[in-house]
Length: 293
Image (cartoon, rainbow, N blue to C red; front, top):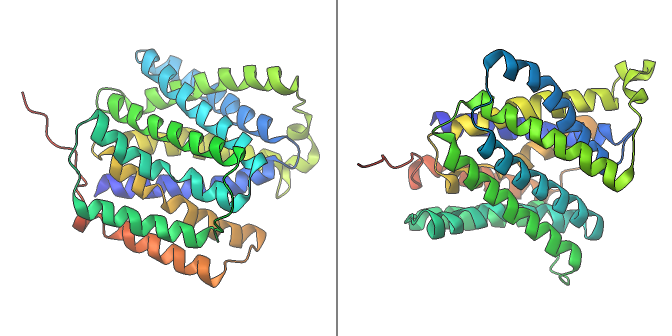
């Protein structure tokens, strides 16, 4: 149960991160928003890593950082080429890909009730995104590819989580994400100015500075650490299902900060997802199986 609780807290933070992302876009492009988020997180993580002598799990952190950065960039490209509703729905196909990968890679046998909960939750997402089944386009393909890489990231974290120090591993991941982010930003868009973060308006609300504080400290350093710690005891297919609650928190914060309208259909969809997630402890295996010699 602790794992589910921590994953839910992480999803709430990531839901707030959608608001933070929108605030960073006041002064920065989507590419640099992603890149600076992790550059700042990595810069904050480095001194802590030196203090903790936390450079032992470099290989795993590099692999996880590459998977996550690839997922984020594919998602960004896809969002630009398709509708927000379709991108929102297709992104959460990581909750479908993850159990499939668990069956293929980990040879896990999942309960039939889990697949039922997954179908119910995906139907809830369908309602929340106000989906219309129009044609499949190139943008949709990019978003689906991003969902696959998000799933691979969950699987990679599952592989390394039990053997690593949670904070050190995530902070290393953020450092390597920051390095990749700066390189990508410079390659794609060229140098960027940080002056908006030091102007007088940076301390007002909302501002890009506040957005980066949320994304770098809370969404990156804290929430991903919670994920890694939770995955020490929670199977990856359950992680993918719980992650669907992120969209609910995003909708709540969208209403709070941007007065976005939640339709009746969207509200019903959110309730469906909540019910599916709430039933996980009763109808799905939430603990990792014990290792046998």
